[in-house]
Image (cartoon, rainbow, N blue to C red; front, side, top):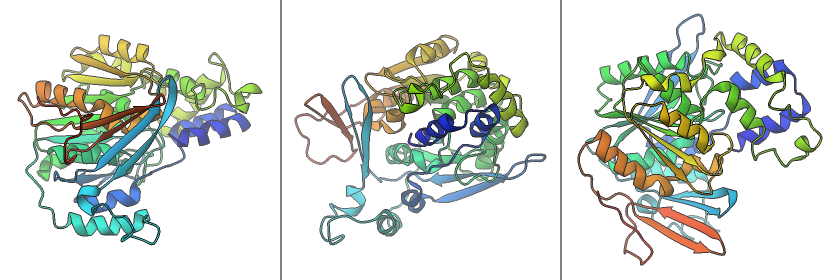
Length: 395
């Protein structure tokens, strides 16, 4: 979550309620996999935001097919943070020196190669639909690893830019308050265009997880919700974010430039942010909405997450009628954005039992290595010849 460093670094230089309020609803933007994601988009959908707000939100549809990316995550025990990589050996081959002089290619060239290969793949019939909602300051392509993971399993995936995200032209984040209605209209559009294969599920990460929880209460009724590192209330999450591991040990905190958790800056900033977005942000509290969710909810979190700590997730789960919780050791908030290897098994088991309600074919083939206190996990549905440390999972 590199964008967090931008926010918090700037916070140290100009900590006024109006400045902080602008960041809450006008975050700087990052869309790490934008170039790689485009070849996979089968359809794009743009919806106008009704007045008085105006602008648009948009979504991109990825059809199910055997894309089979290789997704790797590495981290150290008892130390937050990690590394991530994604490859397309199944689509592009090993791609060594024949791809470029130094054995590597730019993402632009890789996207061109992927576009050619993907055009030759026939989509499969979807077993359902996953609607993916991403984090604060992130564009929809940030969740490309998750989208391809689900699409390789057989799900149609829909990546969404809500207000204030990615390519959306509605500039203000509304922290779920207006997004609930936008998502209801998006669901209606997907149904009208016969793109919403049932069952359908919300999958949200961080900011998107909280929005998914609020959208699932009363307005739209998915068959399930997967919430990765969700926030319980905007008032709590912005304070936790400012005092998270991103800046807790930096020069900004040493000189006391980050407001304390009880500083008057925060409520004033929220009030200013609400005026900018035209909403009452005091109502942006997923914790107050989860009791109305009738669908089953799977909460996923990390033991080292200081923005959505396990205690907060457990409280949300206790107030959710049909909830399960899985907490991964060692991982912090940023590491959870792409931990496909770590969450593959609980997601497969939960979806097959509570949403699909039938056994599914093995889709979790994880290779794990532990060296010098470093854990490296790799997911690939087509892992080739089975190695001793691979752990296939069948339901």
